[in-house]
Length: 169
Image 1: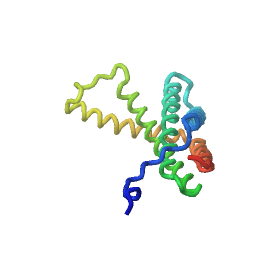
Image 2: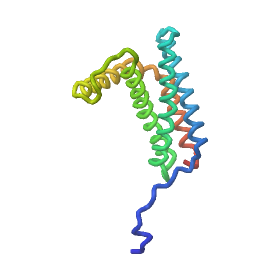
Image 3: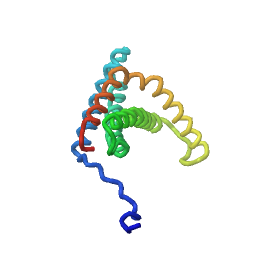
């Protein structure tokens, strides 16, 4: 066995540049905001500060989720057929969009002005943090996640197709 064969392989750096990933993330974030805005207006939400706050969370979460999904899907889908790259991106977009949006929704709720908490890192603070995370995740799953559908799912499929069609990851 030669020294080259025994050396561990380095993880290959994704070939797509920063501009490509940032452009993909920006387009996905815009599409997510439009999708959620359509869902909110169809559900009868009024156009007020809460809607704009929610759309801001969706925009930031969409951008971060798309960038994370690109990196995850490019690592998983490297040297694989386009169908595997499509599936990797669709799964990564679905999970990362839901998780990042729920995380930002939780942070907004937990650190909202006027909310008092127990002293930092006390046992009651940790219980409070856990219960807040569970309740906000439930609220997001019940009210927020369904606003992504049906237009949001079409956006995810389109973004996954665009990712799979690329020759360079």
